Image (cartoon, rainbow, N blue to C red):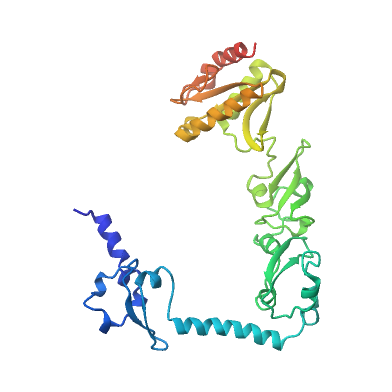
Length: 350
């Protein structure tokens, strides 16, 4: 017996339900005892169709029409020819791009293009060439006619205009935002006044503690101008509380840093170079999947080969990876286990 869900899917996959507009073009006189109600959108049985525009008849499968998006062959050829002829007419009608649109011609990247071809480019050309934005310096490829006819410009500058307000002078933003901005990185040379709240521009920032960090403008605003180093973006509150408690109890200064090994990033929650100590906090919620267990093992092995003592704090039912690991009860208070934890770490680093 098929359940109701499967029956519903079968009904929805029928051509008269999924693509009712195609039913009118089926040549009913040549169906050969095939019921329209039994035709599915993925059917590969060729049937006869009659174009509603030019009355042309042709054979095609419902799958090619519904899923492949094909239509009447003569009409398709006409549309293709029309597009081609419109571009050719545009080339004949308009002259050289350098004469018709001198300001647009200035944005052509003369270094990345063939100078001779660029010089002979008409304003209706379908040739894709390399452009360089005069405002932000970003380079991108686009057809000449798409810039002339459709008015398309620099994609990066277009994205910077998505926000509703300029950052400079917005009353709902922190005053220190402008002071923390150093420069744009991608693309280069974007002025602060041109950035908006929804901007995708990646920039370099400096916090009050003189930390320099990289962040997208919109992400920086969403994080309320928080320094990614001071606030350890990506760490949970529980993780920060535990690591702070360890630091205070053992008087061990630490730094949070992603360690790179053979080009791969190995996130480190607690790193003390003085003791060659690495502590990783593994919450049950994020580390319970089997593939995560393999990843944690590889992380421990790699750091151990580099000479670090690795202690993983395994929460709840997570199994230990090594004898140095410490088990944490889920939802337990830090005060209940901090003494045992610090004693365990002290023994391990002796």
